[in-house]
Amino acid sequence: QVQLQESGPGLVKPSQTLSLTCTVSGGSIATNYYYWSWIRQPPGKGLEWIGYIYYSGSTTYSPSLKSRTSISRDTSKNQGTLQLNSVTPEDTAVYYCAGGAGFADYWGQGTQVTVSS
Image (cartoon, rainbow, N blue to C red; front, side):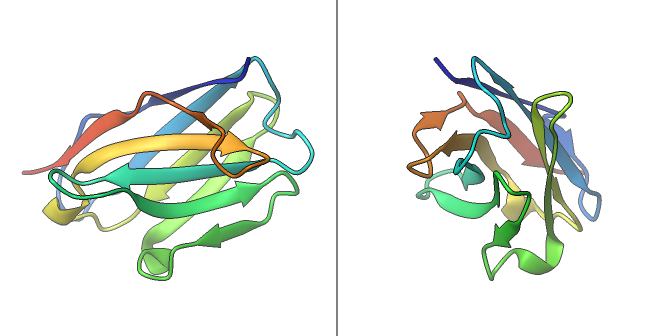
């Protein structure tokens, strides 16, 4: 069974870069036709899709976050990464990685990131 685990700093200062890692176990991040997404949920709000990296390595981002977002992967480590630049307190959220052929069949437990000085 595929399992996902997010990791990274829980506190980031405004204007800095948020960097998170998603470690995949029980499967390969290079599995054909799988999407690997990043999704977040700000406090008191609904889920917001950030973007994904496809099994081919191509990426697609939310238009509202595209200018600040980079999603990549390291197939040798079976990990995906999210970088969000120039963060503000509005980027405070629980961040999830999700994956699967059905876009988000598998989810990590999420990691809280707070943007504050």
